[in-house]
Image (cartoon, rainbow, N blue to C red; front, side, top):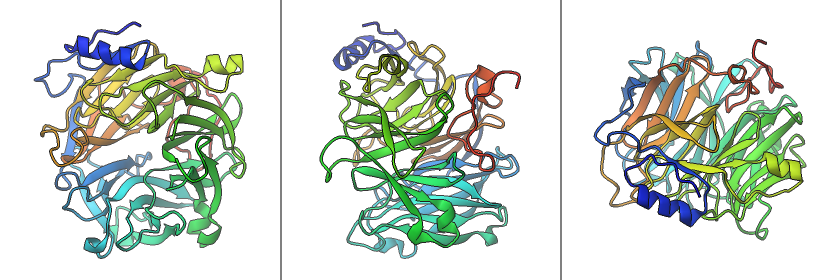
Length: 449
């Protein structure tokens, strides 16, 4: 096994790598530990929005004339109302909360509340879906998400609640969501539930007044019995080589790739199970061409694992057990959510802040930027490493980087030389988590097109 030497804690890092049987581990700890950020990252703006552990995920719109970020607000250890804040980024150096939605009778609710948030467009109107998680013992345990119409922004008086997606068969709400403009023209919400599958909702039907007909499919977890297991997170993207829509899910047993071109009849394409150190997949994101997969599992000391699916496809295998490399910011901690803008991977690193690494050589990931948004101590009343940077998003049009920190709020960055992203810049398909709400998925775009 080759261990890439990038950390002062080399012995411990090598031991972790040997334990996980990974061919290469790159650590982001190549910097002076007393230095808060790398020289190539500029802090453009910062907005504290709440007390400790009241901020979860975030999302930004992609159109420059709609400069809005959506910040989920939770109640993990007490303090703060559950809901979503809308932040105006028209002046990135001076972000401003212009609207806040909060669940009514907040003190009666049980559970964290708002966790994941995504925006979408249907017709000529813009919406936000805020996932909600409430436990039994209080109101709204059957509510998975609230849909807000935000078309009229920046006029906050025009924001209105369209409705709430409810599921009485799966109490506890939706932990994570992903919204995808499908190749058939529909805007689909993929969501985790307390069941052995991800559910799929047609958001066009929902906002057009047909909530009963909005549930249109389920993507199963292909391991365990019918009453156990489930997904934690997912990504959905177009696969140009096959002209198909693909679902990537992390959950019980590892990670799974499904063809969801026919949402009503998904078919398993590939799995990553039996992986050393992975019993439950967490977050998973492919490269634009679907060849490489960046995968997280949620426990202390776990790195992000990088998988290459092409050899399995060529050999006809349906499972990959061995990653080709891995990356972490600090082996003592844990890296979390991530956005792929090939060859860069933008990572919310919990107590290690924003981290950015380069995956152009997937067998040798290299850290290219970082900024520590969280300078507090490890938690003493919660899992010690679950604080700091939680969510991350990138605006493709101009390269603006925005992260949410569970305790310090919203941060806005720019990275030297990164002024926007499209796949054509790198000879890749123009595929990322960003959706083209008007045209839908597109095939490969070559440089110069």
